Image (cartoon, rainbow, N blue to C red; front, side):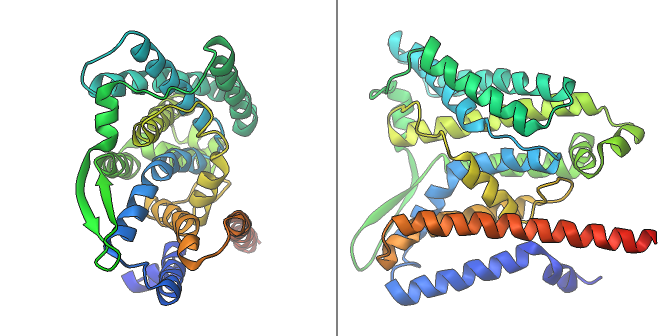
Length: 336
């Protein structure tokens, strides 16, 4: 199969075409889509859902569903920020970043322990742990909005790589430094999934867990470290969201899991696991962000955004279901 044929057959190619058509339509209607500041705004808006999307992609490829990452990220960021604010922390931003990542890994290990030891669907387990994380944050920690972050965290949220200006309106938008975190996480995830036995084990788990065991993969160990890794990525997403807002709102991230999972599925990851690509994840996230951010340019009321995003979720999961049905039909024909 040539490269062109392989590309035309891929889900990512058609998703890319859809994004191009939508961008052109918005540009024709508004004349503002391809302005430098709007493109920077879109890239900025992709950082947090893109980070969460990488974590959700890893779990979905392994054949599971994780709905606990927003609560995990909120608890990790809130607990560390609360301690640092109460102790009047004045050190560099790398300290809270590392503390949040470590706590995210610990909470991810909590998920990994259950999913690797108990034969219950991961959706049920992570629904339970999401409530545990939220309960700890709201009950044991008595969570309230933290309006004043440590100075170094606020400075990180304001730091930018460059500023883009709209030549007509004069509006400016800054590309945040945190965009580099998204690039780094995507690059590391790509290398892990492409070149390590751990990554191949994740794909094998999603294809057929019994076959993965027979092939010699340490299934329990892979599941445990997978959720530790997802916990780390979710914590980084929570850190970026909090610093970019300049305040910590305990419930701000809760409820975002469905949009992230929809973006991953729209990008071609099979909901039953085994297939998917990071390119598709980024394209699916971009499509969601464009729908969220660009309807304002068209003058469409915000409540229609929810309807459009709901349709995208249905279309994304529907495409995945059709692909699975066709694959199983082909497998039955080969078996017969």
